[in-house]
Image (cartoon, rainbow, N blue to C red; front, side, top):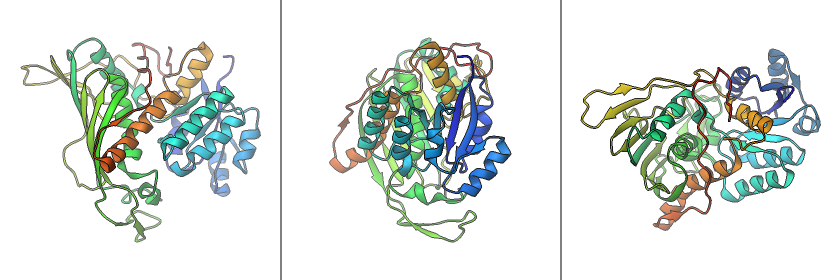
Length: 367
């Protein structure tokens, strides 16, 4: 690769600030343009970032200088944007979830295969120092044979802080499709692919009142379950207990914990790139904080950077469509299991992502 992979961002809402900042951490990628349904907002962001503002997505897709589209639109628009960008010859990295249903996810994956383009999906937090430290610990046998895990996301919902939270309570939203990608992707990185799922879902409230600005006081209808719980069985034999909820106050339950025959690993918050990873050896009363051997502070943009690195080296990206589709199917299986009253056997699988070598310079994600 003689020059960085050039990125066009579609959708410059709240999360885009983190992408603009994170992309600058990686020498293999650079942002060259953006667009948004709100053209004035796109123009303002473009001026602040020193990039081009496109009037439409089609204009961005038609620009041959754009190599990869980062799709930051709401979940309901993901498939339309993904497929259009792929058909225009662009590689695509999309915010989670891949799609709002399995069929749409498959459609995007098939489109990527037909066009010969890469399709990757958030989260990329598992590429950060915390999850890579945890992965190295598991791979080294530190916890012994993995037996189980717990994965907890407990909060009151997003209407207290997000400027436009309504989509979180429509199809494609809810705690599993919103936050589940972080936890399930991290677990697949640590344990490998999931075999089957059992779950239940509950809708805690039929309506929510927005308390953030600028929509303070607006009452929104809730269309999805806002408390999801269940278990996942992995092909390696380990099982995970999972709770994703927008219905609680503070509970003290958070993050990932892994349980093995030789000890317990607190694997941090998978929504973060960097976190302390603690190990309790069997019989120990105090944990050991594991040393970090991977670069910290890389942030969002690591996913597109991994795709760029893979393209340059002619290898499979850790951020890929089989992983995204597998995680999507697993998340949807919790609801399907609750409706059927039976385990859901997953039809997809995915290779376990390759670990990142320790000791790489900041911004590097070599394969």
